[in-house]
Length: 98
Image (cartoon, rainbow, N blue to C red; front, side):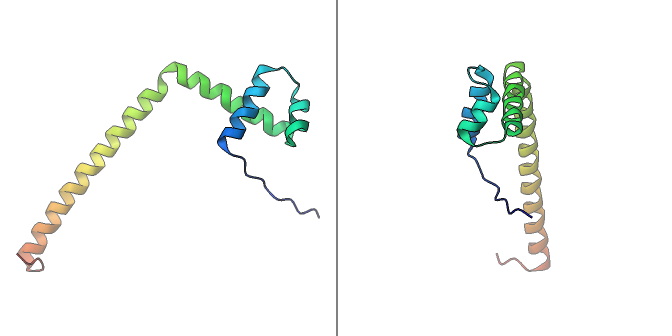
């Protein structure tokens, strides 16, 4: 049984390796050897990078960010409403000092 330690790579490192793979100046095997990374991992990073580029140019990212912002705004409104209701209940039950 072999003990393997998972290495954590920074996003910058992953993107650098993915760009090297996309450029195809060197083979995946050469890049893998140079960085001591399994070729399968490089292919995964390359695919993530290529898919990510497609999303950037499709405009889907803007739509997703807008949906996220709208959800956050709705949640803040709900929190504000709940705080007002809670303060009102505390006041009515005498738990809140005026």
